[in-house]
Amino acid sequence: MQQRLGVEHLNQPITSQLVETAIMNTERTINELSELSPTWLSFCNEKLQLASESLGFLLKQRVRFYEKGYPSRDLDYLKLIDHQIEELKQVYLSFYRFAPGVVHRLKYEEREIYAWLMLQPELGHDLDNLMCGLNILNDLEPAVAKVFAVQSQIENFDSVLAELIEGQSKNSSFYLDCLRLRQTLSIGLIKRWVNAGSIPPQAAFPILAVQDVAEGVEWINENAREDQYLFECLITKSDRGTWFRQQFGIETGSVLSTQAVTYAKLLELKECMAFDIDAPMAPVHFVLSGDWQRTSEIVEYIEQIDECDGEVWVQALYVVYGSLLPLGPNHVGVEYEWHEVVDLLRDWIDEEKHIQNVASRLGSALSFESTLEAMQDTNIDVQFRIWLWRQLCIQSRVYVPWDMAMSVEQQERIFNGLKLNPSLSVRFNLRGSNAVVGY
Image (cartoon, rainbow, N blue to C red):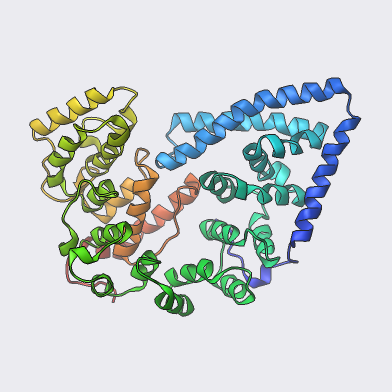
């Protein structure tokens, strides 16, 4: 695990001028390509173009694996992707040693690949390279940029991010979030940066609030409007249900926004538990409640919609039933056509195999333990895992940073740490009672 950065670890700020100088230095290597023979330059371009076709696809596939489920070490295809990526990286490193400009020119042609390469230890140990890679992360898809940054293994990566924030980088909020997810961010640094204006209050104070820092909690209480900062508000309240009812009213119709309705389901507020299958977040509502009595209605609904709209419901059913479901989300469109999926689910309902005794998660009782198991399931998409994580934090009264972009090693450490704290399990599993454990 990386060391948390404190104010004492800061070196000189990295200013925008230093970043511009780094970019100019890499431009110089591109200009030097004119000294190569046309034959050599053509050879380099051809080989890198071929490598980029494969590497670009593999990097996208890898991010998709992290989005669609827990990146387990047991996933053979993910291991194969990582192996092939490592082999292809050697091609770029060889050409970089021959002429750095041929690799730096990729920032105009293959921005994802270029950013990834500059964030690899072999090239990112050079500060100019690292600054150039970080500079274009903002141009990439957010999920891709986050995976590249959060999983970078460059030794001084966190220090460089901190020094860029010190230098008032335009991307400071993103760098702050990366430090948060890499679990190297200290409270002292956040306070320093927000006081200096290096990061905006709306980026800093929510992080402080979930760590129960008084200034953060106070800012959230003063600045939360309607359903803004609902997660942070609920984490910091000792009586979440009472606060929520006071904030939104006790009538179901008073909870207007989609997000507020979903948090009401998470809190299991009885007046908000009516199930609307047409609601935008209905699959998530079903997962949060684990209410198997809705399953027959859901399968009837699935029979009326196409695969595009129905696949998310198969995923939701899997979160509730796990291996008890007659198929997994990964089987849709691969082993079974959509009409076959519908037939399997209908037969399953007709045989009453969906009936459970209690609210369920992965076929077991909805509990702290089964929720952790779901968080480490390779078939549960990030759209469900993010809400399971919020449920874990709020109902267990604990905050741990988590994001799908984290490496499997980091995610393992987080979940293993949660498993070692029995009081969290007690709090979560007593969520429906009047008992408040630890308060």
